[in-house]
Length: 114
Length: 110
Image 1 (cartoon, helix red, strand yellow):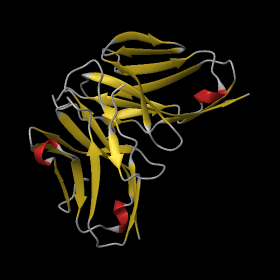
Image 2 (cartoon, chains in turn purple, yellow):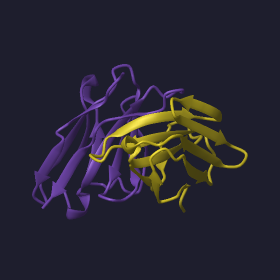
Image 3 (cartoon, each protein chain N blue to C red):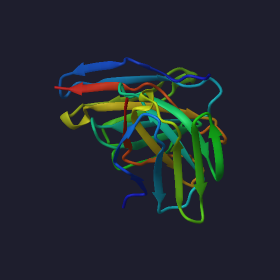
Image 4 (cartoon, one colour):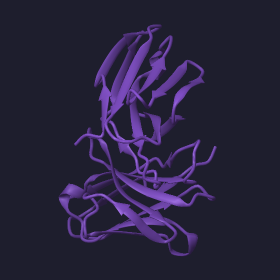
């Protein structure tokens, strides 16, 4: 079936550095999402993106976060600068915006900030 | 406040027993999506269920909007069913942002 890919699967960086997480969504999907899951905790919505714009974001989507999808390539989440509390698994998802399939999730990128 | 309450938090079954997982929600609902989260973290979509009952093999999902609940029934559980089950509420906002429950950790012992 359709798959969402995420690159890299694991990233380790020092606090204060910049990191870019990449997502290759399902090809004909129009809505893109990032979620954050701290180890052992609940999955939480960060942001959604449609038609080149952020449509909604949660309070977890700090000013240091940004998203883009230049020219239909990867949908990216950039964190600059990173903080210790950014350590988590970040999941990308995409959807066509209509049922009945809901959202398709990638396997996640495990970000470790030292 | 918490949009989605998932119960039980954990469940241990003997192989062959049935499991009933619940999600109760407090906000308006467009649909509920149920996922199985593998130990490595990746999500497998089980159902996208706006209302009524859906079946897939040994799994059944039932969403009752009036009662603000959705359930996942696993019949004749197997050890390979062990893992975390998540429900995610798709609220009626048009953007399909999900509010996740905290998950049910299921352990099936032989």
